[in-house]
Image (tube, rainbow, N blue to C red; front, side):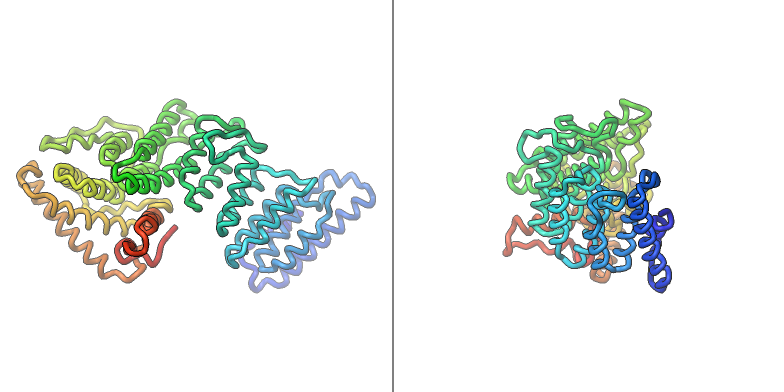
Length: 463
């Protein structure tokens, strides 16, 4: 049994025909052993389980023998050590998810869910629920609708203001799968609503579990980026989303500081900082961006409104990089206000924080905003735009040295833009957040006012 489980870790079966034949023989021997124990009512039955069955199904799938995998699964007995259980269904959902995504057909996934819910011997737990929702989230609209129905039925979360306790308590991992489903299917309102329901403890969560966790908050912030953008273009004024996103990060900080032992797991990361800045920028909310920057770094951006020298913040426990993506959000948010005073403030901010290197080498280490070269180009464009917006130089710079330094940045920006223009199509990948924002713009504007993809680099997107 142990050997079968170990064979799951084989990365490639190519050229290992003999090993595959040995695996099939091992499985047949295991089945024969179980059947023999059942016939003789052996006491060994108590220690037998279907782990080898699940391992064998994975091996068949990894070698592309999906028909054989289905045959083995469909012929499993209804009782005994060989019977399918929650772990088996979880395994098969994961297998079907990959295969269905390749074929673009999730009918097998939907059928498997119906088979599971009609079973009298297998119950739905959080693991199989996660696997089913995750698989369906990769499908089409009908698959998404089924996934959302599953969430409502088994967790108690729904689209109304009220939520009820479902049959399965929420775990951080299950909540993550649900929130990812919402963002993938563009149900952003449900994403933040359901996250808030869990935060308010209005629904049953797993005992002694940290729910929500940092990954859950990231999904909430991601949803707020798109909601903030939609809200602004609906009313042409900043909506409530940036302050709500700021409250999310404040919630994390409060939880982290409340318990020095377990609170570390809720400490905000660079990811949360940059997503929060994205919410403020795409929500056209400069005032909240100032507060967000102060909360995460300790620096007071309002101190840059005049020519006074800003004071360094007190030492903080949170270490965030004021890097290219962060400062590009600051610059873009300032430009979007169309306010010359805020533009001048942004110039002072950039001149201050870009003193060592106007285009630093820090790169986000996660998916949603990942693309240092993209934000380097955004920063360059913003520097050139701000330079045009600033008219009276004497009212902007504190001294000639600062003005000279700014001019160096402008020159560097010109070089960076030239490099971006000369880059091959797709060479500079567009981050998922920025690509989705462009899609939202195009959906809002209609076919006659389509915005071109960000710059000329949209052909290749990392998600």
